[in-house]
Image (cartoon, rainbow, N blue to C red; front, side):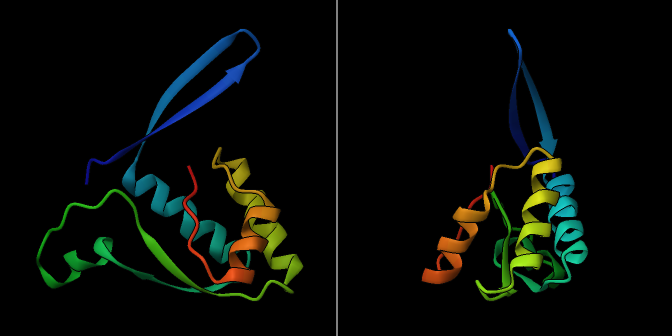
Length: 106
């Protein structure tokens, strides 16, 4: 897949633009989930290629086995994403878990 994600960083007076490949973003997500010891399954359009049909997708969806009371796992996951320049805060993840909502990290 050649899907790319635009990353914008403000480094002082310089704004840096870079693109990340879809596969790189998926690898970061899986690495962070594994590092956090969070059970997950990949679902949605990104999985359909396993069955031989390619489907265009702008993202990937994970179902997580995670409760909003598992602070260590949540903090580890968010810190890992942030180290990789993906924007998610503990508060945003907690709200999503409490309401059982989806969250998109850019």
